[in-house]
Length: 63
Image (cartoon, rainbow, N blue to C red; front, side, top):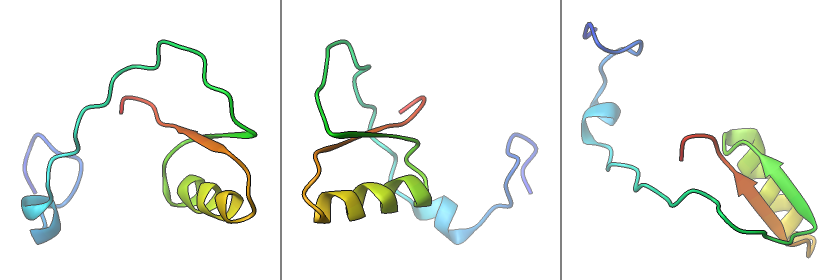
């Protein structure tokens, strides 16, 4: 384990593509549902809501 990481070094971590920076939200967005958090549960909820016809916005901290 590296000293600067709280995670175990892995092949996945070493080969994953960098996550592109996204601009900070600086305007109003209208949607039927706002999902807070882009983890497994948040993204799954957003996908299922879109399948049912809702407009969805996913907000993720620091991304």
